[in-house]
Length: 121
Length: 113
Image 1 (cartoon, each protein chain N blue to C red):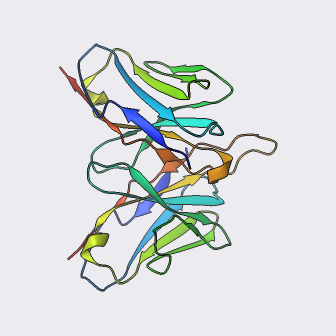
Image 2 (tube, rainbow over the protein chains, first blue to last red; image 1 turned 120 degrees about the vertical axis):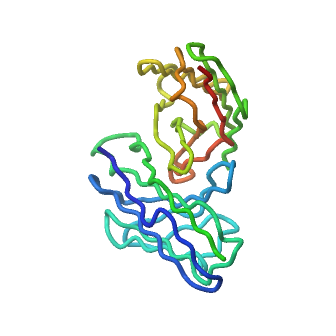
């Protein structure tokens, strides 16, 4: 259980174009999804927190107009990289947290998709 | 905000030996500490986690210990196998960050036959 599907797994685009990445929780619902970015041989850096039905919360230094996030349902969040440039080339990974059981004082574990390798030429 | 330090950055062990990876965190409000395994070109996979109300948790060959006073936690892998070779990340989270995970820099583990 707790499968997160991310699509596409790889995408190559030309500079100036936009790319949309989809993140779906397949067997659970998630009110919150997180988008991370990972450069080669580095750790995962949180870009933004996506909340179903409301605006995303962006980390400091992440341009909200460049990285558009939409969380339209409890199982789908999308990240659109607008006007992509070569420096946007990276590994983008989404994650989702199952809705906690009623009365639980802790959040459920976070599950990650398999990432999207974006290359901007 | 939360700062997670992870050591070592690389670790090489022989098959059958144990591997230990250590992490420290800075925010005393952090109460959830997962460990993830990431293979090349894939997303991180949760392998074990521990909450602040316990000091140790074990799942077959994998164990995690937590010392809240010292603000550090460790991953222990016993009887290592070549398929354990991967990058391992520790993380910490708390309510203040909306329970988003703050990751350590990762440990590249190599298990040689």
